[in-house]
Length: 280
Image (cartoon, rainbow, N blue to C red):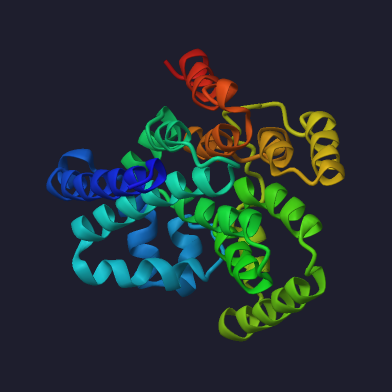
């Protein structure tokens, strides 16, 4: 077996162990976001504002089947898939697929917070990886649609992935079709999303909205110029008014994937340092 295949097996085994751990200790962990937001919203999605769920409505198509297994098993499945997804994303977005990148992407503070809350950032990062790594417009389009379940961490990277893809017209057409389909299924859902959360300014990474735009917009523009998702993801804390500590997993994954191998550990250290300074 090659080194890459060995680490594929290691990642699968890790996710299986993680699944069992989250299942057995679900009640002790008590994943707040999973239980307080996504679980009730999935049962009454037309009134998701009542449960403070701001994600695009197609997230329900992904989460709803998990509840058929019970909330503990569903939570464990989400956690295991998220861990596998961020590990895969780190490998797919890198040039060498080195095992160290996968390890750093899976084991870090934002990932632990994400798992503890039962959040969906890992699903979004699977989409980010598909959009960035695939030249097949169908896969890239599907990845972008998946990544938009958490647009506050994925959108800057997706803009760059779209810009550098040679099949822009096909991706744009697919986006129009999917967008129209979403309107048919859920109505003008984006208006509901805007009305649900009109004054959110909770950014635990850069709490000086909108002054961060002075940093974020040039970073995004440079990323578009370079056709490099690294800069788009780096710009995220400066572009959005709403960002929690677990959403720094996007920076972690893209940094450990895109930085040279000898510097990829910065993707682990920088979010950890931020957490120590701002939270502990």
